[in-house]
Image (cartoon, rainbow over all chains, first blue to last red; front, side, top):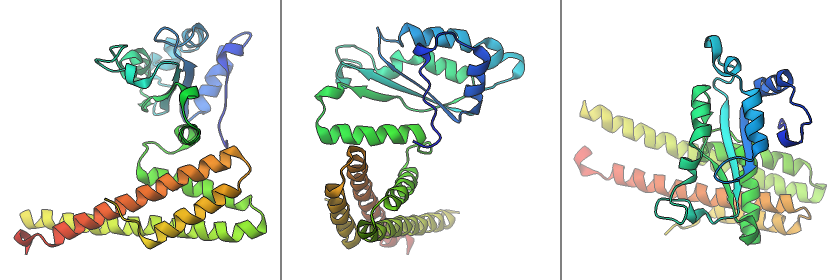
Length: 207
Length: 62
């Protein structure tokens, strides 16, 4: 994927705090990805956070180095997602369990994204796993929030790249697909504009 | 119930054909998800059209 840095903190022999700060500063979106170990991240990530996220770096002296960066969590679990809710076997939601990370992100003045959960991956059907793969890619580099507008833009961008990789024969058809997809986006935009105009007219009548 | 508009139906068919031709898992996954978005566009478009009808035929605003 373009412009994505995959940084495996558990495999670092020694944590170079300055280097980690530099990496963090250059990112627009910071995602912690981990398997759920006793309702939290494994020790390796916790150790990295405690070492790297010093007070001065996060909020000291009114300097917020992570301010306005987006913050995401990718959590994998072997338990079914339905267990994580009030009344479920676990009795609480992942949103509740992940509160400490959100508290951290809030303190750092980051933009908090919804959690991306991967539950019981191996129990999923192939189409479900395929959908999950693309949802995951979108979680990493699609514009936030996950609105239909932003989804359309992401798919248009990826489809353009996909079409350019095809052989000549397939490319012709795929180009038509891309064009039609773009037309659909435009049509929807126009419908939205018309609706907005009518709503505005109704509001004006009330005045 | 959502009905498919002509373009949308054609798109879904073509994306389907493309998907079947792809050797790479990731490409097939991408095209599968693309179909979801196309369906979503169609649904949203129908909802807006219905809302437009409702608002245009609202006699209290005539």
